[in-house]
Length: 130
Image 1 (cartoon, rainbow, N blue to C red):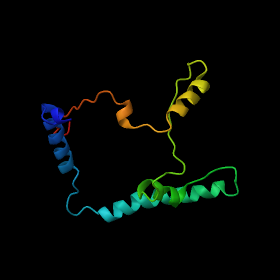
Image 2: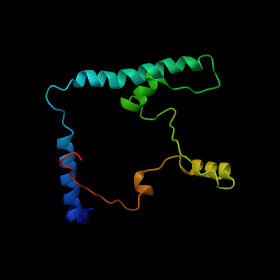
Image 3: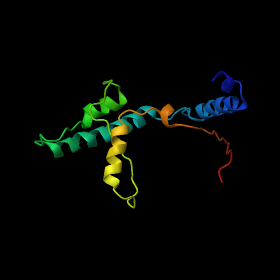
Image 4: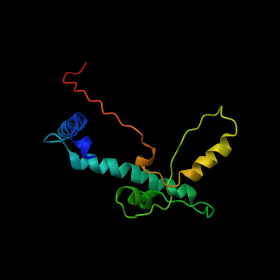
């Protein structure tokens, strides 16, 4: 890592992150409170309403609505009760269900470092809209 920090790629990454950070700043006068309230209010309301579809279903472990939102966004829980991941599989593979179950057993906990072999950083700046 020390060698990487001295390389040109590290300088490029640092400049790109700095630029993206500056470009992400909100302009003065932007109604950020209103946008934040809408961004959180609408999905949480819909998730809460969806929980009523599962009322009385004791066979299902349902963590939706506000409890799920707190798990994900507010880090209220160090261990998520219902972790999920959607992985699309090719349908032309023979015995796909058996292969998918093998993969599911292997993917109980995966870190990015364990699956990432190489990362390349490409940056460009477009100052004028096309």
